[in-house]
Image (cartoon, rainbow, N blue to C red):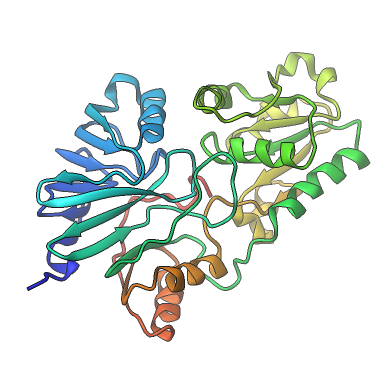
Length: 337
């Protein structure tokens, strides 16, 4: 008799636990064996005895944590099944950031897919999301409300390029997260024909260098030296979100402050953070992409891990699927947004 995934895949305080495999997926505290979907800090914690992830995610964990990443790190490429305990595990691209993966779990004829974080839009900096048929689809819902419908990426980058034309005497400081968002904004600018140097806050340099070493072309990148602020007039300067409102940014001459985030759809959030130029660019699926993914995967049952659970559960039910919330804790909605 085929066991239902709820009998072997269960939420625990430290994360989603797969009993026949003897591992957790994206645990929020150190465990014996962890499967990691991607390199953002709320999913890839340090200190596990052993961790299994894609080569890209492992490279990111090593860059971020050094020797503290895990007792052992085992790389596993996309599409290559590996037996862990009694479970066949396959990593499938999630389209979130470099190295991000869904986790396909097959046990005694039953299949569950844990999405991790994902998006459905083209992104030259990472492998695109692939829908995987399964019995249970475990999905995020960061932007799981109908109000969150992200505009085309090209339109948002167009706003930045237009502002550069209108205010050529002002630096344009764009808040981006170091992993994924930074490299994606650079790639979107390059795709739009922007071939000038892009200047980086020091906190962004290491992961950009890692992307380049792993084969992602980001063009001419230079350090943003505030001491030479005259050279930054009319230039794009990328910085962590925490830096765009502090003394570092204020030392530039009359900067245009921008922030690239799905949360910039909410005007009050932009106002609270002092953002003059909100850019709705997200590394997560929006409402339409979440509901389309449920249809594409076509699992009879959906579990929602974190985010706006109630609305997505309702949408899944209207599609004729069973759905419930796992209400996993420890995931940062701002991380990677």
